[in-house]
Image (tube, rainbow, N blue to C red; front, side):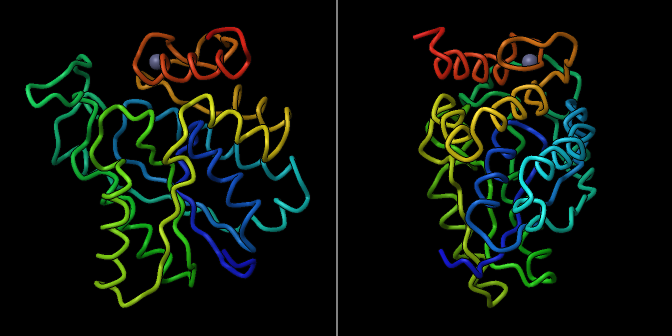
Length: 235
Ligand code: ZN
């Protein structure tokens, strides 16, 4: 990657996308962020976004200088056209096709496509997303091949040379915490632990050792286990 490259980071306010944002701030000359309001049950992640951005700015003068505009996009049509546990008040369970009903069909494809459109307008050259195939919940749109195919499709369809970067693709949650430590030391780990939001149910009551959340939904379970492995309190 070139130091002159500029990036647009898909930033939800969760652990993964905050780590991706720190990664981009380390590697690119200028970094902008994009967030999507799609009627998610855990809309609380949208309210923690500005605070996380402010804390990243305070973390490093260099990061503050690189961090540019934040784009919030209304994608409420997603909850209109799909029926999932991510966007509707229904119990989280496994569907007949083996996928959890928190899977929002086409969501990441749409996110990346909208991000590409914004990057086109802003003259940004790299899209960064927190998709992960190692520790994913089986979501097919988190797969490396999906993202590689989408990069080709977007560049053909828009006559661009955008790069889609997914720094977490082959990391499990423990390794994602380790990456945060590499990028910004304990201060960044602390910022991510108590500043970001991951819980599918939008719980933000008690602060656990791994952060806020209900502690039992699939997202909390993954986050808690990864943090405890990282901290050495669980094998
Ligand atoms: Zn939870």
